[in-house]
Image (spheres, rainbow, N blue to C red):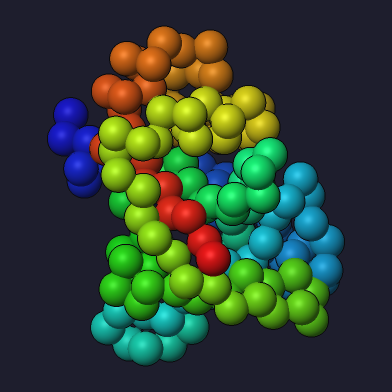
Length: 148
């Protein structure tokens, strides 16, 4: 599998559930750190939104992980260099720096510790208890951004 282009398309009930869960941050409801990510489309320039899990490390550093892989929001964020995190009426502008594959292992492990119950199906059997080598092997398929 080419991890550099890995993308898992929403299937089954996913599109319906995504629409429902995208409303929660719009209403000001955060479930375990969820936010509505808004990024300008790389072609249209229009705002595109999707729910994301905002991961905050113990040192306060904040990250976005793309469990489905190289999604549209990832491609848009790479071009835009930043966007907005929204929760109800609160809007926080940010800039983003993509994390190199070699630096993702501890971040993927932390993400799986916190949200493995929700996103585990996208990690194809890799869990928070995986070895560093197993996490390093899948790292190219899971874009990670530090946000400032």
